[in-house]
Length: 147
Image 1: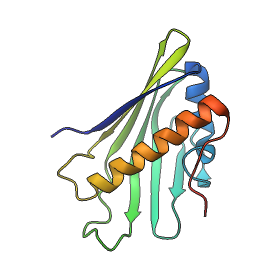
Image 2 (image 1 turned 135 degrees about the vertical axis):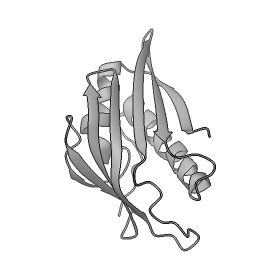
Image 3 (image 1 turned 30 degrees about the horizontal axis):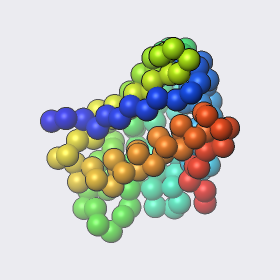
Image 4 (image 1 turned 180 degrees about the horizontal axis):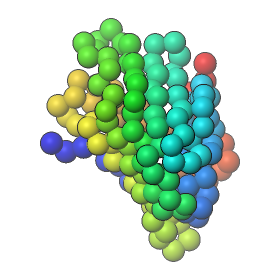
């Protein structure tokens, strides 16, 4: 089955794009951030209010090239979802590729596919926060989740 994937092009360098993913998650994804996402082996948790969280381990981090996060714990406590822990065991792969003066950022969420109950909700969430990432990289001000 096809895993969720999306690609954006941003008007910035691969170094700055990597920096946003490795060091600045609270500025574009969610201000509710605990832990560290800076290097391989680090563990961090992001929250979207009291009912949604994801804990990830950095499996690979190659400067200005790619980052891989494995989801170790997750809860998406929404009443419309029967399986609220579907993200556990999935993997998020970020790939960065310079394109002239811009950078192409590709995210693939391995394990998030149309057979997964939260696919529509989660893919819409990805689209929203990729937009915030692009905005952050191009203007310095993203639209992260705020408590």
